[in-house]
Image (cartoon, rainbow, N blue to C red; front, top):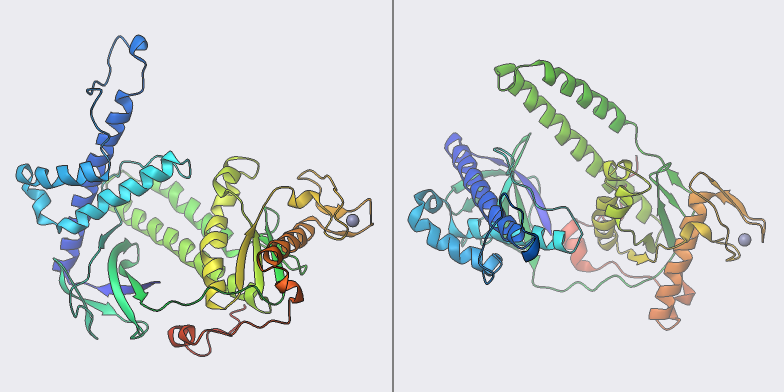
Length: 414
Ligand SMILES: [Zn+2]
C-alpha cells in the first residue's frame, strides 16, 4: 500500500530536495542518451550507411542495461564529484526507473522515455528506511535528516515502512510511503451480485444494472480556466517575473484537475461496490484505444487509471471480486438471447432482431460483460459460483484494522 503525506520541510531541506532532483535529472538524461545512442548505432544496415554521419559504436558493445549503467555510475563518481553529493541508492533508483520505462516501451506499452528539462524531474525514492525513522514529529531520511510530516492518518502498527518517495507538486512537497505487512490477506473470492461495467465516450461508464454515469461537469470548467491561463501565458515574456507567476498558477490548476479526478474516481468506485459482490470490466488496451477510434478523450478522462488501478484497489478493500473479461465483440452481442447484433459506433440503442430486446447500447454491453465474467468464474470454481448471491465473503479482520471499522461499508456517494 502507498500512503501519501504532506511534508513540511525547512528552507534548507527544500533546497537539498531540489538539488537531489536536479542531480537525478542529470543522471536520467545521461543514461537515456547512452541507451538511445546504442539504439541509433544499430539502426542502419551495413550496406546502407548514411554518407553524412553515422553513430559508430563497436559491434560488440553491450547494451547499456541497468547493471551496466549502475556500474558506470559508480565509476563516474570519481570524475564528477557532483554525483557524490546525492545518496547512492537514490541515483540507482533513477536507473532502475529508466530500465522499467525502457522495457515498457520495448513491449509497446508506452512511449519512449523522454529527456527531462529542468524542473521536470518531480520525484525520487529512498528505497530503504532508516531504523526508527518514523516518529510523531516526522520522518528521518538519509541525507535530509528529520523532516516534519503532517500525519493526516495513523499508520497501523502491523505495517512496516519500506520505502519513501519524495514528490514535488504544485501544492508543495509530499512523501509517499510504501507500507508492507508480513501477513497475507487472501484474495477476494467471487460471490454475490455481479456487475458488468462498460466504459465509453458518451458516458464515462454504464453498468449491467442500467446505471449510466456521465463525465462530471467540473472538469470542463477547470479545463476552460486552464486554456484561458495558457493563452495569457503566451502574451508574457518568457522567463519574466509575471511569466513565472502564471506558470505556477497553471501548475496549480493541473494539480487540481488531477486531484479532483482522483477523488471522483474513488467515490465512483465505492459507489459501484455498493451492493456488488463481483465487478467485471473489459480487458482493453487503453493505449490502442486512445490512438484509435476514441481519440484523446479517453486518455483525458483517465479511464485506464480508473479501471486498472483505482477500481481493483477499492474492490479489494471492500471485499468485492474484481475480474477482467475478453473485450472482443461485447457491443455486438445480445445480452438476453446471445444473438449477434451488429452495430457501428453511431448506433446508441441495442435493438435485437432475434428476441426484440431494446436498451441503451452501453448497458447491453455491460450485461454481456457481466455474463462473460460469471461464466469465467463458474468455470474456474467448477460450477460452485452458480449460486451467486448465496455465498457471502466475510470482510477480512485485517482490512478492518487498516481501514477502520466503518470505512469498508460507507457509501461515499455524492
Ligand atoms: Zn436478443
